[in-house]
Image (cartoon, rainbow, N blue to C red):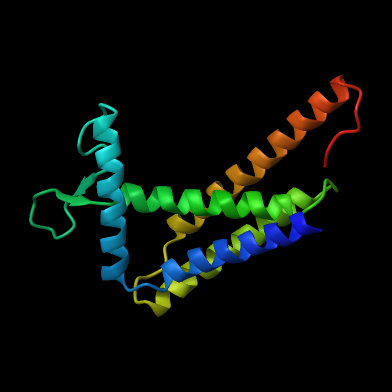
Length: 164
């Protein structure tokens, strides 16, 4: 029972993180993404990947010159936060048929509501982000299923009852 409470708390915190970021004004969100990008680029440089490994260059202002943006970091954030959501949703369900699909449906609803919330912060909603969110959730759901399958296999090899 304590495990389920911890998972529910983690799920609530994950949702607050997702929706809280969507309610940030565009300028604040961009500054946060740029800071994360700078930290990731510093780590990438120390690993020998170059100083702008996570930087995306595009002509955002239309002047013909590529501008440094954190687009890649923002898209990776979508995938990561929804992978966590998908994993948490899947961990909260049992092994019944259709439980994974139900987790995916909840995640897709969360992704759609997340993009709708961005309209309130004057950032605009993007179908591409909903698709990235759904892909991230599917990744989290898949990883939980793979770990469960591996745990069942190793437990049955030892002659034990498989863990849930």
